Image 1 (spheres, rainbow, N blue to C red):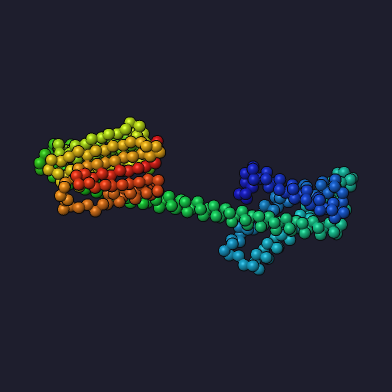
Image 2 (cartoon, rainbow, N blue to C red):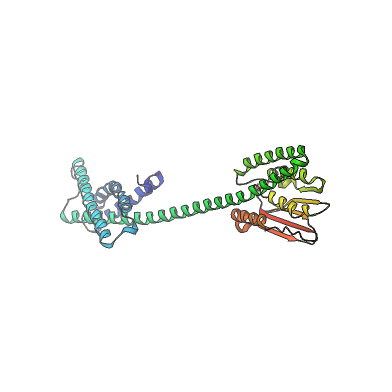
Length: 351
């Protein structure tokens, strides 16, 4: 079915347009001194509305000849031929209607179907159909542009999701390999600790699987995920690793991408706590300064830089994920001081 007249609103508008065309045709008949106003209106309006159904076929004529395949002579032949045939059909409709009203009302409303009137009707019908062809051509062009824009937007979304998936696959194995190495090391030293770490690791990945299906989770859910990770690391580092969380209760319902903080905590341990003889405390804070959510992670570092310098993959992945989701509406900043390293994330406030 013609999509431009498929709903009630567009069908009503189309009928209204053809009603106006019928009135204009009646005006032309009167101005040409071919009949009077009463007969002209009764003669012209019903055939014009009936012809609107014929003109709907112009949509399929336009679709049968895509713009990329058009040639001048081909277009002239197709559009001109269909317009002329439609003009003949319009003359048959008008002639039939004229016979009906002449029969029903004893020639009171019928008009003499002379040669000039017949020529006028054929030319009018051909022009009406040609205008329908041009109108549908424009509508199809706009529809194609909207379709192309929609496809482009869908492609961008798919590309972004694929990029995020790649970033996630870079993060999860990294943590898994480190955890398995820790369990392997603990097996020979403390079997009970290795068992507890295995249980916590299973709980961590069970929660990760349920949350990773969602594009965004609440900060409270992200904190719960991080606590499982920190429990695993506490088994490994003992009292050497301390955690201080200053989470504003108003921020717990705020939304953020899953697995956003865990890589930062892992970096804080790997490049900070691990290199310190006495360990240290990681500070995790959150606060709101409308319309922004601020989250920061700060950890102590050794004055003497470690030989195992990081490649910055964690921060790069974090920045890439946030940039992909929020664009320029977000910010990731890191600051290294002589005794500490701090990362602050600013996200648009969403609940």
